[in-house]
Amino acid sequence: MRSWLGAGGLIQISDIPLLTGLTAQTVTLTWSQLVQETNDYIRTYDLKQAQIQIFRGLFNPGTRQMVAPAFPRFVGFVDTINIKTPSENNDGGVTVTCNSHTQEMTRYNPDTRSDASQRLRSSSDNFFQDTTVVGDWQLFWGKAGSTTAAATASSAMGGH
Image (tube, rainbow, N blue to C red):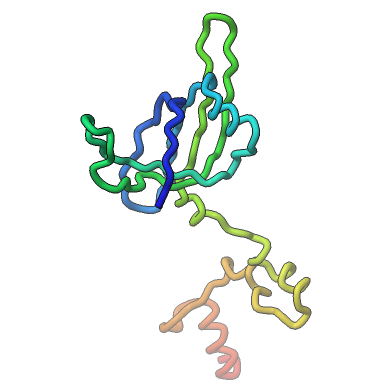
């Protein structure tokens, strides 16, 4: 069960792309900063990397009750927050840009993929010792037509 609070400060949500694949999506939310609940959340808490979920629910206009459970349309994290304080007779607001949770699949830690970082953890661990040079190795399989295979065959035959 979820409790929903309608503060009335949401002005706009950008289009939520419905795509398949592993591309991280971006959604922009715009809130009015005249609503007290918006100010409380934006100015009191550090929302950077906060989890965000956007649900879509259908309501009966006569009863104002949901006709079915709301379903999630976007799940992600807050990326940037821009508070625009207006001068007199101008528009202001809060713009929040969010990235989908798919961005987590693009993260990696290069420190764990090097021999030097592994040796700091264990002096006997040499699993990643060739990580930096393995991309330059040339391995020849099958026929003996390569320079490496020909040199190996020549030395094995006594140099003939």
